[in-house]
Length: 131
Image 1 (cartoon, rainbow, N blue to C red):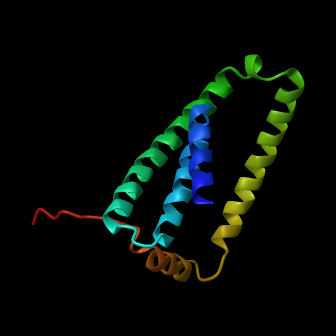
Image 2 (tube, rainbow, N blue to C red):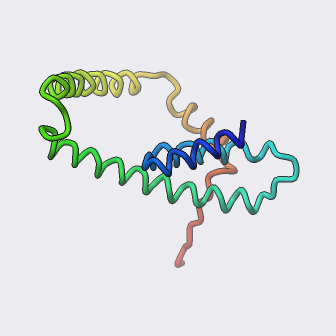
């Protein structure tokens, strides 16, 4: 399964599906600790690489979305543009409703701290104090 994911990431990258390749790379990294004898230093290094690529992928996706908006007429057919615009409006309404619903979830603070505790080892934050 791991080898298949690696091959899938390579294929995605070669076919210019960069954001998909990075997402698959993230899944591979999550599976690596299960391998016997996996070095924690190597895992830390790979997680760092992934974090940088994930940030790059987010910027890349934003740039692509801006390009789609600017060149919508030349990228999509009339029918697809109408669908795109309709779905975009529906999604915006959904996003607002979802955000409002998330604010009403009970125990938000407890959920937040539980997730921090669960991800504590993966969160590597260094704060330098100049006191």
